[in-house]
Length: 452
Image 1 (spheres, rainbow, N blue to C red):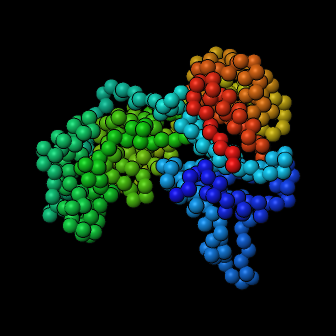
Image 2 (cartoon, rainbow, N blue to C red):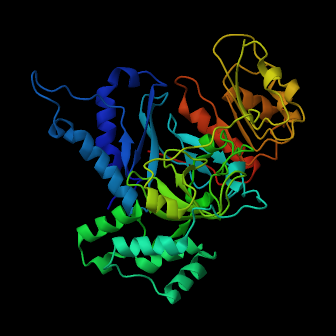
Image 3 (cartoon, one colour):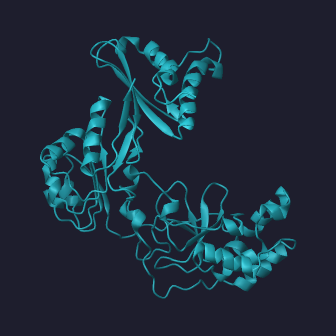
């Protein structure tokens, strides 16, 4: 099996790129970038045109698939998931292929050169992923919660189901590290929801789903839906905020040690019993964790009993209400600009825009909660003003702004992660050099480049 760093691994792909872009690669400095992973790839090669009147067939692209599969085989052999590459023409006219391994300190990006956020502190996650639920004194189960009624109802609907023993319920509590609420124990006393109990009978499984109102996890499939169960790349997670309105039923969290996930709605959204409700919620309410969102959950029912008896079909999310904006976007040239966004609650600021006068950051100085700043190229009047933003943990700037900070030895050292904002097509290798400079400030593993 050839290695990911062997020319034989890349030769078919390299031929495709050279044949498709011979004119551009004939000029020194001409380059193309791509990425290949076990689940997909980008390949800067022309898509073949099918014959008139015929749709494009798999066989029409077999050369591309074969070239990519050779690289994917080397990835699997090396225990890797992804690799990026750059094809360029050197000053002497030869073709160079750069094989790029970003290493453990760099998240994969979605644009060339496929370098995402730089994780400057090992294991660091954005503030919303560190947020724990606020205590809600006086939170109690809803009046509709009735474990005995729930158990009787389910036994009527599932007379032949095999339930969990008290010993098995205790083992589940020990594994999860939390006491199961009485309604959840009542449910599992009726049915384990184990596939082996159904002896391969899909209809029996459907009967359980119909009786409960969701695709029920087996007892040993219960898990705590805390923040670790909902990972997100720094580039996106750092621009999110966890907000809970004073009248919210569900706390606006990434996850909670009090969310016990017990089922699925059939569309990938998890159902959980919520032991850490919002100010207007109830202990033991049922929430839906939307798989398309990274923060928050929706309320499906104020109790498991109500969910099973009343069969609500959807769920609703609490509005933010009168909570002051903690995430703001400013375009250069807008009235008010940075000064209008600068408030004590501000956590995230995005500065963008294509035209207008670059903005100053002075109104943001000393804001206690401003942890994320992203700024497009040409939007900052003086990048050195960033030194006055003392609470930053994530900073994403254009290469020229990073250059100004590096040259002035003014990169904020309290950062946990960093990003590089790229506009349009740029030479990829200088971007990789810049990323390595930033990583070196924190003594993090550098990006590995092998030139073939």
